[in-house]
Image 1 (tube, rainbow, N blue to C red):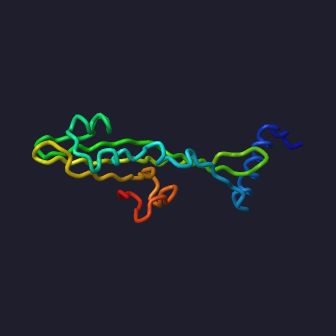
Image 2 (image 1 turned 90 degrees about the vertical axis):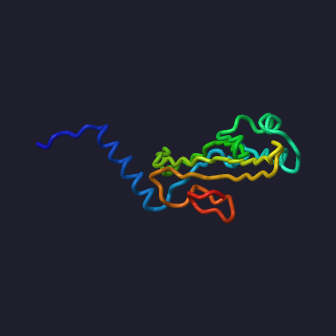
Image 3 (image 1 turned 180 degrees about the horizontal axis):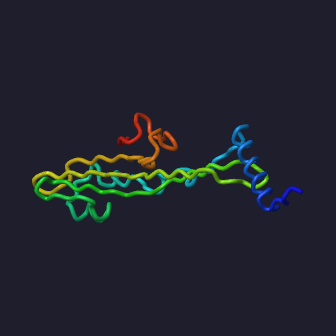
Length: 151
């Protein structure tokens, strides 16, 4: 007489088969959070650009610099956030399959003239994909940018 199988094992096997069939049939969806992460790292360089401000005024507007040099006359500011994408199979119960996380960094470079007054301002967003992913980032938001390179 054959051995009776465990009921839970049978249910798991059916759920696994449903997930595999859903993937093979293309029944998968994704959820992106937040939708527009660049809104979380706003461009505040416009307040500095075109103004004749000293270093302390710039730091009041942009915060503490990530890198600074009085000798070379520049401040580099950085603000960051993350964007997550969750891919899941559509079955009677959603089955999470993959979670992808990109880091977004806004860098702002401010240069100063010999008198310590702002000379030029440049800003841009860098999207860094997960280290295991060599493909393109989650979303191509920035024209002219390539993965792993500043926009």
